[in-house]
Image 1: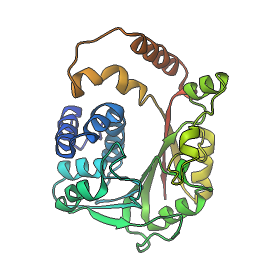
Image 2: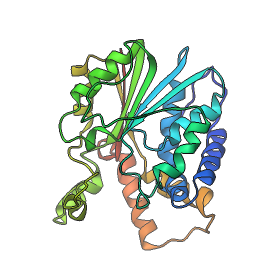
Image 3: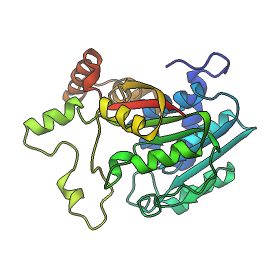
Image 4: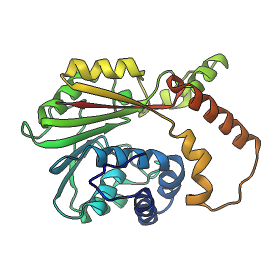
Length: 280
């Protein structure tokens, strides 16, 4: 991951910031931030930094409890205007990131503006045209019970001319999903989740070509795509350095993770996640 040349921030600084945020959140969010999603946060924060141009005006759509924005705020303590929009209803004591009411105080203390809105129920973003330099939408489109075109068009509307969307989501062609199909399992909807009264998992995932097409339909230009090695990279590289400092153990699980990681390295189309960047 390469940071924008005119911004003097190295990866170690971001890592230390993530550790501090995880410490504030405490369990069970700490493991999620420093192991399950650690490399993912690193990659997303770096993408945001590399696409900052002039003003640091950022909207994170569906950003959960705002770990990425909290990190950005700690990096750019001044001259940043950050907004988080989410419905938050799944953040209960059962959620691995913890309760909304418990952890939202960290966002409020950082002066991050919070908008509690279910986009599927209210399809208009509550902002004027040409407001934001960057809008991020990570792991959201696959949770919508219909296509995300209207949301992407709304994001296009609220971006300034030359502003950028950073869209991230799971790759529908991910190797592990193909293996699940071979084993007779659903590739991305666990049955026990699907039959619950409140369902918060995936409805429809996309491959790289489809994500690019979604952005094109919404009006975006100069679209680039990154096939990401997260979270396989995280589980192989960062767990023992950042979370529990255990000594490396060649268990069967670790061996299988390395085999999976090797396949992803050799074939980008089989990687777990896709990030697309488009310009207004």
